[in-house]
Length: 164
Image (cartoon, rainbow, N blue to C red; front, side):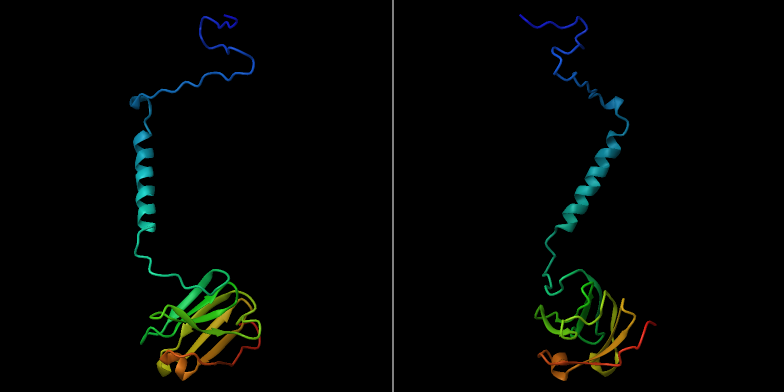
C-alpha cells in the first residue's frame, strides 16, 4: 500500500534498503567450481591427518619454541632440545620428562636462540655441544647418573671467547 517499486524490480523499495544480490547457481556458469571443491577436499584431508590421534605427548619445559634437537645414536637418553628462549633441556623420552636443564643462574645456556645442539657419539652420549646466537659454542658433560636415568648436575666447559 504505501510502497512502490519500479516495473523492472531493480529499484530499491526505500533509500536505506540494499539492492538485491543476484547469483547464478548454474554449474555451467562456474568453470572454477570443481577446482574450488577439490581444494576444499585437499585442505579437509590435511586437517584430518593433522588432528589424527597418533600424537603421544607434549614435552613441556621451554618457554618459547624449540629450535633444534639431537639424540644419542645409541640410546633414547639423552634427547637434547635447544629453544628460542636460550635454554637447553635434556629429556628422558621413555619417562616423558625433563631430567636436566643446562644453563647458568637464570636457567639460560645462551644469550639468545640456541641454534644447534649435537650429542657426541663418543663416551656413550655423555657429552654434547651447543651453539647459539651469542656466537659461542659450549661443551656440556652429563653426569653418569643422568645418562642412566637419574638426575645429576651438569658441567659446562670450554666456552668460546667470541663469535666464530
